[in-house]
Amino acid sequence: MVAVIKGDIIASRKLKNPKKWLAALKTLLAQWGKTPKQWELGWGDLFQLELNHPEEALYKAIEIKALLKSISPNEDNKTNSKIDVRMAIGIGDKTFSAPRIMESNGPAFIFAGEKFEKLKKDKLNLAIQTVWPDFDLEVNLYLKLANIIMDNWSVSSAQLMSVLLKNREATQEEIGKILGIKQSSVSGRWNRAKIDEILELDQIFRRKLKIMIP
Picture 1 (tube, helix red, strand yellow):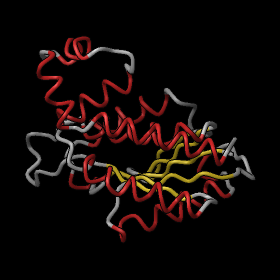
Picture 2 (cartoon, rainbow, N blue to C red; picture 1 turned 180 degrees about the vertical axis):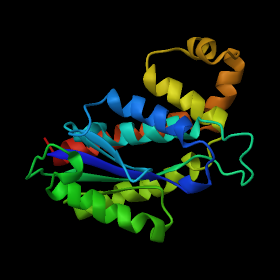
Picture 3 (cartoon, rainbow, N blue to C red; picture 1 turned 120 degrees about the vertical axis):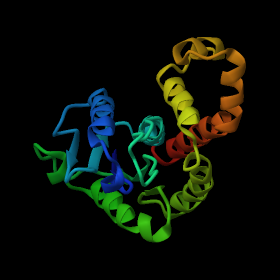
Picture 4 (tube, helix red, strand yellow; picture 1 turned 135 degrees about the horizontal axis):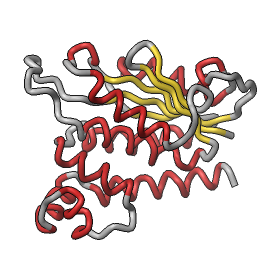
């Protein structure tokens, strides 16, 4: 089984400098595989990522969201739009492997595509679809609540989460040094971003998925 994350940048045409987020997203995706077989960007703001370890899917999706929301909009952005991302996770088999991920196929790809098409209508920015309906029902409820938190991350909250996800063993003091802020400021941002709750959700996701995929 594999996991596929399909996503796009929300209202990307309103963002003045696409190079700003595009370069950051490419750099992050390149850490997880090679393009175009394992990840690919297309049509300006659409991307797809394949993961051989499905249990990593939610963590990677949160990392993508934190990275993009950590990027400050341009000062000349008259619409005052903030960068955000919409993503669907599909978990299932891969039945056809193509040189380009956009051409590969199987239930994981179909699930990701089907869920992605429903996100805007359902007013969700992150959801999952698998072969297990009960699993989907429960996890998507958790994600619906998590969306309320993550969609409202400020740039500073997202920056903190982004740094933490790349430095899981770092203390708050060490994270503060990376961000150039005091430990007390890290603690305040930590609580506002609900980081403990988001990390706990990732652990629950991993445990439940391990039951489905022993």
